[in-house]
Length: 212
Image (cartoon, rainbow, N blue to C red; front, side):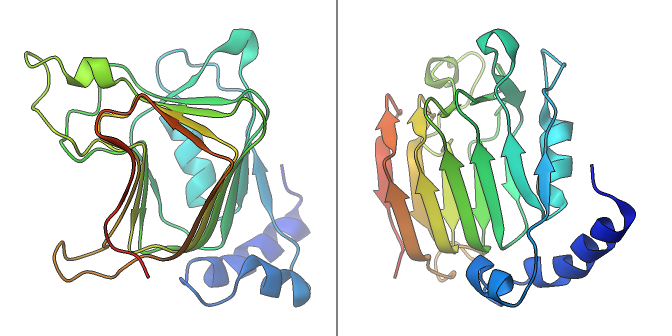
């Protein structure tokens, strides 16, 4: 919860945060900006925690996601990360999980980053992103697709993914491709994947399609 003065400063910074590639976190810090952090309270909805996460992500603040009591996961619908210059921290033991029997679209992604810049997705020990590949293989409920990726980077720039386990996607654990137009869209640039486990994904752990 932010006080009034701090909240005003955060809102002033959002003009910078929403412009891809304008200023990195390092430059903002050097210029005297203090990162604003949305620290989520544990979600109490056992069925869908999407609204809480989207509110935090759309604030353009840095986001910290805590583990839930009893080892529960955060069940979510596809999350579109729209802000640039954002750090998303999954605290130790945090599990972000695709909501069961959702993700009907052939291109639905757990985390979708299209033409944003300077994003870090950081996991502390035990942080996990999980989908449900066996559900998506049920032909009576889902149209066949290899495009239900856990993390889709589309024309994204300066992205770091570190310290997470990515498992059981309906496509790739991480997909790196073009943003905007499918054929002649913007390439990804400067993508770092560090200390990350990609396991039991439907197609591949990672597909590198279009990156500079």
